[in-house]
Structure formats: structure tokens, C-alpha cells
Length: 136
Image (tube, rainbow, N blue to C red):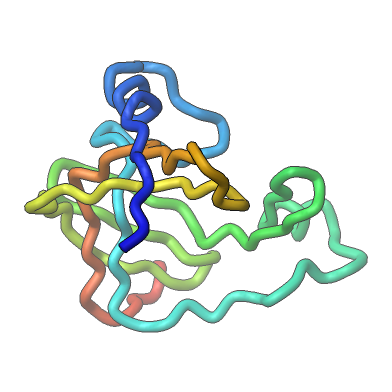
């Protein structure tokens, strides 16, 4: 069975560092996993001719990839609220992952001596199990 070495040094730096990466959304709990019991309906591509307010709903990564912003996440102790747009919110709770999950980054092409990098360890998840509620 083929095997590949996992390099843990990048995850170790992330865990020990107090700096937040501009690419990854970080919380006071570190990076967290969002568990949503349903489907988020998001556009498959960024529409053309958006207003400045519409542009704020999208983020561009590496100057070519566009992603829709889902909403705003608020954490208050073990409670979480995810605001979706201006009309809906999801209520959830923070739970500890047991065991924690490792985030692996694989090389684009496997070659001899290639390593898989463990870039982070996720220790918490936010579970949203109810239906969306209106924002009042």
C-alpha cells in the first residue's frame, strides 16, 4: 500500500501563533468546523455588473476564484448565531470535537519525497440544527 509522510510543523506553528491568517477565518476558539443541517443555496458564479453593496457579498481569492460570503458568525460562550443575508439567522452551539480533526494539504502532484502538510488541528465545531429564523 502506498504511503506518504505527513509534515506537522505548519499546524504546530498555527496552533502556537497568536497571529490570524488573512485567508482563514479564525475565532477565539481557533478555526472551527461549521455543521449545518440543511442546504445553503449560494450562487455558482459571481454575477456581472454588481453594485458596490453587491460586491461586498463576494470575496476574490488568488485574483481568479470568487466565493459568496455566507454571512456573519457571532460567538457568545457556547452559543452561536449565523446571520445569512439580511433576512435569516441560524442559532447553534459550540461543541468540542473528540477526537480533534487534522486539516491536510496535499501536493498538486505526488512525487518521490512529497509530503502532505497538516496545516491545522480543528478542536471545536459549531452545530446549527434548527431551521432558519427571521431577523427582527
